[in-house]
Image (cartoon, rainbow, N blue to C red; front, side, top):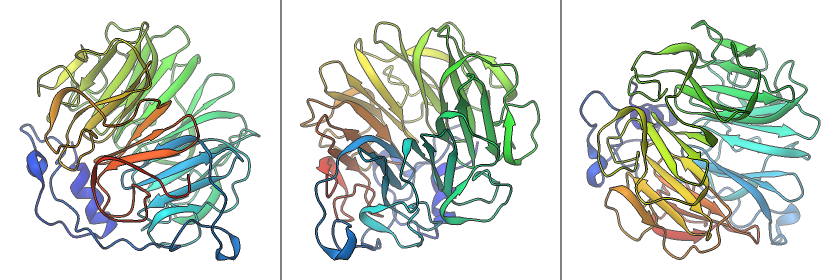
Length: 409
């Protein structure tokens, strides 16, 4: 398994300083390291305030979805445009620059988006017409336009005209089509494209053997899908059991997750979680920071039950932590917490869920590398945790262990 944080920081060109809390060392077994804090204060506020034409303060923004990348986030707005904030080394904010921004900036050329997904280095959106556009880093062809050239503005994925949703992994991307099949593109060194090969592709390829997919999630080097009958299948890297089939054998074709029927699935760095019928949650894969939520730090190749959650409606897995929205609108998180990403005012890891401070009406949650964001009914967004590149969106680069409001929303 690759060192997710170290690789990210190296590619981002950001120096590692002293580690924070329990995330300073990799756990046993070669797990992805959560160590190495990034020096704060280095992010550039690309706008100096809420973005608008002519430099004046814009009207209040209203979000209908939010997606966390590794060190940046994006929101789908009520007017079907997309705005992003945080690190922008590879153009993943989509505004034609590589300047970080601690407040939201507009993605160029996106005017009819229906979904948005963010990864470590690239971002993708689905339009109302069913096409997919991506922007940011492209060394493995994860932008899907037949090239390996980075793009600071959206480019159209080749050959996809009927997408319903999109998900973004480390260097790969997958989309569900209207016929309930899945196509993926980008890096395939661990079989994360699911087509029975380990050949990287800069254009979409069909995932083998699944034709009835309802939703999908990409992790660092693996991908999982919920089928219309509620069964879950995963493919790609399986070093820590993140495919959930009881083995640690990597697979380039989908394998069945053991013993669950799910409504939705989410994939983190090297772990996966699903909401089951009735609102309980089960997770599997890497557990070095307690991200499986069962009171241990023992990785599992089969699903284990998250302690104390019986009414989850929405879930998101970050690199080393997981969060869920409950039916009462509160949010609970578990796992790594070296930067306050669990949102409970502390920086102590927790292998069982803890309640995020001050949030009582969330509708959705998303998790990145050591930070988390939640969508509110009003269309505002609150974020907490790591903020070295302005990924909390509050106009600062100051970490916060409790939620802060994204500027302009």
